[in-house]
Length: 529
Image 1 (cartoon, rainbow, N blue to C red):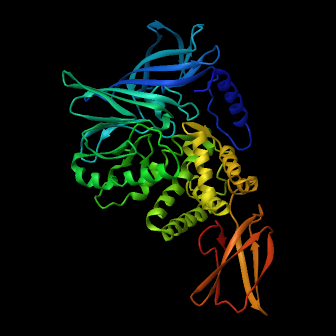
Image 2: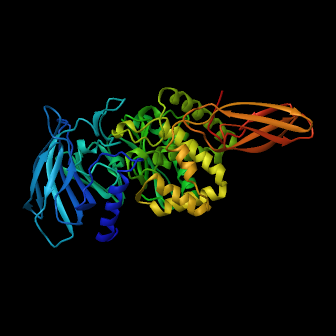
Image 3: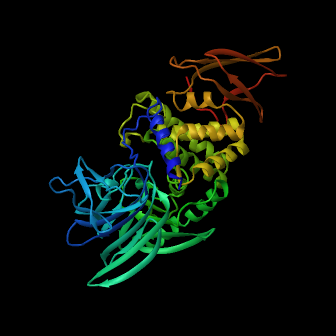
């Protein structure tokens, strides 16, 4: 962790950043403390959906003053009652208003302080208490984006990351998996079991989880000393182990190409989740029907494993910059598939994504980083997934494969277990490439749309003439456009640098081509009119 002085400087800079035109995150940051660790002590029961919790929060006191934790208060049947807050066994002054526990610490010279919150109630979200598709009772953490506050007192925003420990007391017939490494499993008698998982790496609350139900589990492989496992419903045992086994290969690819893995393990869990997959740090949840025994979810697994680097370890510092998570996971899943199945797979996946981007834009003409969005539930879209992935594809082509990967590695090395904004990623890529990328990021990330092209060509007297006309009115894009000149079985690639709304290009050619194809290798996001 940084020193208190450096932390105060970083918070000051963060407050400035979140007021600029490219950020609109309304979450109020704590300036007086930095959360260092959480210990979540939870008791689960078969008798009711009420949970009993005791959370110990260790903070680094940066300055005197109060700080707030998120926790949804009880209204009617759902929410939490807080019975007290203590420090070293002594009562601490606090208020519990508007779903915030505001803790008012006594004056102390201590910089590291631990506060304990006792509470209980029935969560309406975040912790999904339900039955599996096979009718077994289950408890699954499903926090993204800010649902941890329904069951875990915490700073429920990715800007403040901390180590976590789960101490789960549950009926002994359940199996328990959670974020981190298992460090204890003890039979308490009276039909109850106590299980402890600890994750030392700092994680955001959006990607911590537990899974409590009847599981079949298998250790699949160790990848560079990282244990990879599968946790599936017993009824899906062999099919699930088979389907999730590819996670080991995916993990190795990303470690080899990006950098070190941050977490204690990589568990792959069949779960009740509102998402197709949820990238919980070291404990990924996949939707129940992901298990078929037919190896149909390799792309999904690659996406969620890629998140362990981008979104989980290098996290967005502002919800509006979530493309740094979802766009990256989308494209790096494609990169993994390209490495296994070849470039045609990259082009196939990008073509599908391009179609979705164009369809989305017709109804939602907005940029990837959209400062008008204030609700984190609304930041996910085709823009932040597919268009974000396409931006990385274009950046890779502009910089070249080797420089692109070096830039990615440099960015991850700098922001591993930390937070970043789009400007931080841009600077990392500029530092490695030596290029000014301000125009690239301005037009592709902060400007809506893409080039809408009308074009024509003719050939005469040894010259190929190509006219390119950008039809969109709100912005004139600047971009390299590859053309495929096809004669017989031979295709020659030429690159045109388009800088104007309408321009003509002349390419010397010895004979008339049979046809011309725009962007045959899918390196440019555009719509052909």
